[in-house]
Length: 384
Image 1 (cartoon, rainbow, N blue to C red):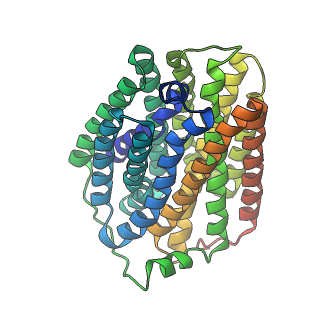
Image 2: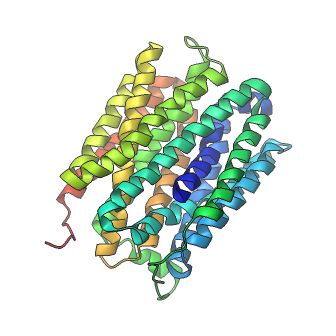
């Protein structure tokens, strides 16, 4: 429950500006491409934070990082709601992104260590579902409150929600009982270099960047498309479109169960293909088909991500590598993909409309599919 609430808070704060992007363009007189920086600077700083918190958690433990990360990020969310200028808002969002890194850097490693292997995949799936619920909550609350009073009340509302979750995490999170510190051997750079020696892990890192890049590209640009003809939705109605995330919260644990039964090498490519079908559906003009495309994309994305993130932790453990470091590197490239592709999507929309956005996302998913096919050919490290 503590990890679920932490995921809810972190991802509500992280992606809440997504539904506010058109409002931010008007409030600060910036272009759509510039407005996406409200998300990209956060995910970029988060990626950097992962390189710090992952190795640190391998030596110092997981629980303190989890608690402090959520609390500091929530306080920064309150400050962001009062930002006097665009530049200050971006600085605060960058600091917040670094603080948010504590959860994705250590959550998967924490769950894998503290839970029996027979339920670890399902638990990680539930954690990913908390991420989905958080992403949905941030967008819904943001959209509703934007319609009432603009982006500041929307940001403040999500900040208060995050503060409540932070208190719950401090009270509920059990202390680690199975954590074994990883001795420091050489410099951090040398340790990081050692994590790039397994071809399967390398493929999973690249997969994370491409998969997340495609997903964020579609959702960043979707907010602009929904407020323009032929849809002309206000922020509150546009926010309701993000209820597609509920499907992601269901597909994550389901994918974990399927992976336990049929294997990761089967489930992940199929999930990527499903996400690609979703992107193709968004090219249709009717709103119902566009929303259906978002739903299909969301199901495929969360299924693939839930299984791949658990795959990284398992592969690292079987290969004798630091689990926290491997998991943080996976998430590093995941958020690098989000930061880069999210901004590219804003520019694609600004320059050539939705077709360009769909081509960008489709190309990224095609690359991810190629990497999954390479993963199928890698040698398994599992005993027997």
